[in-house]
Amino acid sequence: DMKVTQMPRYLIKRMGENVLLECGQDMSHETMYWYRQDPGLGLQLIYISYDVDSNSEGDIPKGYRVSRKKREHFSLILDSAKTNQTSVYFCASSLLGGQNTLYFGAGTRLSVL
Amino acid sequence: QQKVQQSPESLIVPEGGMASLNCTFSDRNSQYFWWYRQHSGEGPKALMSIFSNGDKKEGRFTAHLNKASLHVSLHIKDSQPSDSALYFCADNTGNYKYVFGAGTRLKVIA
Image 1 (tube, each protein chain N blue to C red):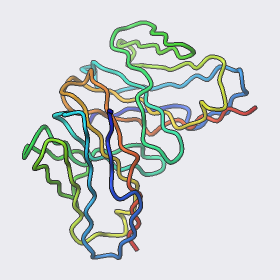
Image 2 (image 1 turned 30 degrees about the vertical axis):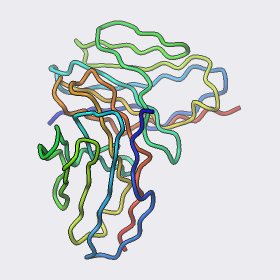
Image 3 (image 1 turned 60 degrees about the vertical axis):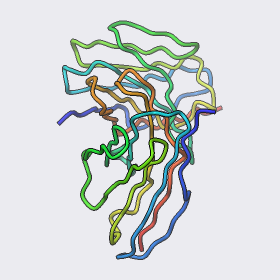
Image 4 (image 1 turned 180 degrees about the vertical axis):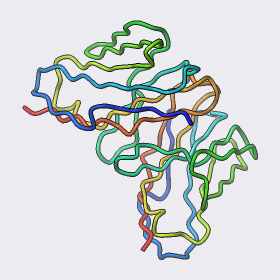
């Protein structure tokens, strides 16, 4: 089954707490992504991972870091979360190359109070 | 920086009507163009891709690409209430980076 799974689906944290968002895929895709979605801004790219331990900043990496120790698993970490990081976060995966479909997870809705 | 502009921001069409969505991209090196659809509470799902100039039809959906004018569009014929969703266009220059527009919110009313 071609699936991207995100955990948790909903998360409430206080400002200054650390946040871990997890993503898994069962398609053996080399490339994985983290996006955030805010009303009127569409999907903004936070980080790209080309494979295990091979990550690159996207357009809005400030305040975030990532970890990919296994091909099927990609984590997004917020150290000392800020209120402006309240958003919906999506993980996606694809085969290499722009001609390939991006498969998205269902998202994690994060509220930082 | 690579940008994708979508219009309109929102669109209401009657059931059975035609919906037309537009995107203008900024990078002449863009090679691959995608339409994604997102229903409320879900992640985006790929609707269709178009890589060559001209039209591509899949069922009720037709995409049109004009690389010279940096324009891609999506036309939905015989719109259904289930087509109500947020639609994104995205382009890719052939590297790993997909750039998304801000989205068009389509509502189909019965």
